[in-house]
Length: 248
Image (cartoon, rainbow, N blue to C red):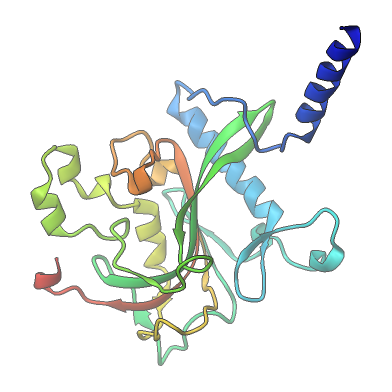
C-alpha cells in the first residue's frame, strides 16, 4: 500500500511538472475590470516577445531547442503601432499591396480575408500573467483554403440588426469587434485577388478584451463566449469593395 501511495504521488508531481506554463487549473474573473485590462496588456506584451513572423507572415513561437529562428525578430521588435483603444497592429514589410494596386478598407466595406484568428484569455497563473484558453476564431489556411467573405465581426448587416429580437442584439457592437475594425482600416486591401492565390500575410492585429466584447452581451460565434477574451488576427485582405444598399 505504501508503494502504491508513492507511485500516485510521483505521478501527480510529474503531471504538475509537465503542465504547460499557460495552462490554468481554473480562472476567476477579476471583480475590477481594470485588473483584467492590465492582464490583457501584460499577456499581449509577453505574446509579442515570444513570437515572430515567418517567410509567409505566419505567427510562429520561438523554439527553445531549435536555433533556426535565433535571428528572427520578435513581434515586439517590429514596427508596432498602438491605437488609443489599446489595439495593436503590425504591418509586415514587403507584404503590402503596391500603391497602384491598393484598395482602401472603409467602414462597412465587404472584405475578403485570408488568415488565422484566435481568441485568448489573459490570466494570472501563479504570479505570471499569460494568454490561456486559446481557441480558433478564423482559419482559412489550415482547413478551408478559401478567403472568408464579409465576416460579421467586421460589419454586421442592417438586415441582421432589423431582425434581432433583443435590445442588445440590435446594436452593431453585439457582433462587431471594434478594435479589429479600427486597426484593419489602417491597412490597404489587394485589388480582388483570386481566391486561389497563395497567401502572403500582411500583418497582425491584436485586440485586447476592452476593444472587443469586454463583459458585454455579444454574439456567440462558434457557440462560444468571448467575455474577457482578447483576439489575435494574422491576415491578408484579398479584396475590399463598397457595399451597395441591396447587400446590407
